[in-house]
Each structure stands twice: as C-alpha cells, then as structure tokens.
Amino acid sequence: MENVPKKPMLKIGTLKLKSNLILAPMAGISDFPFRILNRRFGCELAFVEMINARSLGYRSKRTQKMLYSVPEDRPLGVQLLGCEEKYILRALDILSRYDFDILDFNAACPAKKVTRRGEGASLLKEPEELSKILKLVVKNSHVPVTLKIRTGWDRHSENSKVVAKLAEDAGISALFIHGRTKEDGYGGEVDYQAIREVKKSIGVPVIGSGNVFLAFGVKKMFEETGCDAVAIARGALGNPWIFKQSVELLKDGRIITKPARQDIKRVMTEHLDACVDFYGERGAVVIFRKFFSWYTKGFRGVRHLREKSSRVKTKKEMYQIIQDCSSPAKQKTPAESFPLRGSL
Ligand SMILES: Cc1cc2nc3c(=O)[nH]c(=O)nc-3n(C[C@H](O)[C@H](O)[C@H](O)COP(=O)(O)O)c2cc1C
Image 1: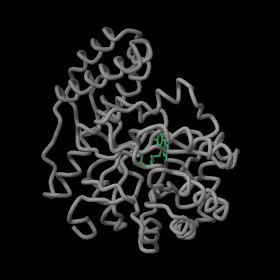
Image 2: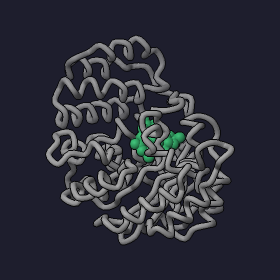
Image 3: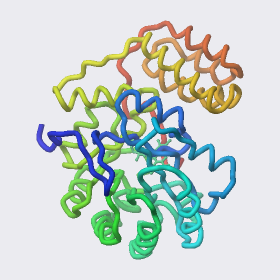
C-alpha cells in the first residue's frame, strides 16, 4: 500500500500520538459524549467543538460545558476561530486555564456568518494577515498550534501551498487541510492533488480531510496524498466503527469489524445514555435525534421511526424507538448520506 505509513504514529510539536486517525472538529457534533464514544473505537486525538474567540467568556456556562473534559478524554484539541488580536489574546488567556493538548486555528469554516466577519475561510484571501495572527497565537499558546485550511477560497484562487508555507514559517506544528475550496462547501470531489502538493512543500505533518466516509476513504486519502494522518469527520456520524475498520484495513488489507444490527442498537443506547448524563434528559433527547438518523442509515423501513424520533421528548420514548429498529442493516451509503451543502 503505497504512501500508507508503516507505523500509525504522529508527532505534533511535543505531542506524540500512537494513531494517525483523528476525529475532525465538527461544530454542533464534537461534544463530550461523542468524543468519548469514538475514543472507545480507537480514535486517539479528538477536538472540542469550534470556539469563537469573541464569544468566549471567562465564566460563561457555555464555555465551561464546551470545554468540559476528563483524563480519559485526552489527547484533546481545541479549535479557535477569530481574526481580531484583542479577542484572540483574551481567548488564549481563558483557554490557558483549561487542560488540553493542541490548539488549532480555523481558517477553513465556510459559514457566511463567519466569513463576512473576516474569520474562518476568508482568512485564506489574506495570507499575510493570517500569518500575523498565527505568529501571535504560536507566541501566546501554552500548547502546540496547528492550522486548519481549505485548498483556497474558490477554484480561481487556490493558494494552499502559499498559505501552508507562511503558516509553517509562523511556527505551526501541523497543518489540517480539507481538500475543497470554501466555495465547494461540503460537496463535490476532494482535490487530492492539492493536498499532495502541500504535503510535499512543508516539513510539518499534514493531516488530510475530505470525503472520508468509510475506511476505504481513509486508505485513499493516504495513498493519493502521502499525508501523515487523516481527519475523519462525517464518516464518524453514527459510525464510530470507522476507526477500528480503518486500522484493520490499513494493517491487514481487509475489514474484520462489521457491526451487526444489535451492536448498532447497543452503541446507540450507550450514546443516548451518555448524552442524558451530560445534558440532562430533555436536552439529550433533542441532541440525539440527529444521531438516530445517522446510526440508522441503511436500515430498511425506519422512515416512520425517524419521523417519530423528531417528536419524542423522553429517553424512555427514544429507547423504545431504538428497540423498534428491527430490520437488518445493510452497508452504509457514503457521501450522499450526509447532505451538507454550502455553509453550516
Ligand atoms: C457538521 C459539521 C461541522 C463541522 N464543523 C467544523 C468545525 O467546527 N471546524 C472545522 O475545522 N471543520 C469543521 N467541519 C469540517 C470537517 O472537519 C471536515 O474537514 C469536512 O467535513 C470534510 O470531511 P468529510 O468530507 O470527510 O466530512 C465540519 C463538518 C461538518 C459535517
């Protein structure tokens, strides 16, 4: 398997990881229960949901909830979004009171409400400004700093090599690259060549992201780009097994773990329980509705259960819906299963 690293290791600054499969940051998804669940299946490094520097408050309950973690939830990355020096510095000060291992700076988010403020992917249009911000973050962060980018703003202005080089010179310890432009949003093909060229042009580790819906997508990302690690995003929605399956595929060339319907139902129940512990019953049931749809992708005859799940209010009702999923699971469908177009 050409380009697939012989040993699944990764070094990001001072942080040594035994796995080169990472759970990508996902706003609205990567909460404490989701991270802990994926770690059980072999994910080592996971990220907290993206945090906006401007809205990070010293004593805000929301901040504390987002940054809640336990020793089993390590190594942990925090991802920061912002563009104004004073808010970034304040955010770094607040974050210095929390335990985590990596600080990732976001220059990839395509959401309109983010880019119109000059944050996220819009920083790709201002590489020098981004470089200035990164120098500030690297200087003031107590943990290694990484950067998340896309291949460019749009197909006519792809500049990931330039941005990557400036970022490396600014002192980042690794680069995450989603192989699509901001204009691509979350649809369409992934530009493996752009990732490969970035990998060749810088010395720090490069972590590839995009269209990794199955273990085969992980393998393809390594093979096509020569990247050092792969970030799994939508592929982990309702499918934590992707971590185990990817390890198997990369090591032995075949997938051994094939969760049966009962396994999926058991993991769903455990995930729901973890959400109830973390959010309380009412909040948990609302949050879990979307996961129910993802877990049951490929189940036959569950449409009415999905509709029902969008109305239930108690964990007892949700348990019942999980129990009622009795039709056999078939192989999950990839990309089309997660219709996310444009911005979040
Ligand atoms: C619901 C959702 C939320 C996301 N939130 C973030 C985020 O907060 N920060 C970030 O850098 N990327 C975010 N992403 C992008 C993913 O990390 C990943 O780069 C992207 O989905 C491409 O991988 P995929 O095609 O395998 O899903 C998000 C993606 C999804 C689907």
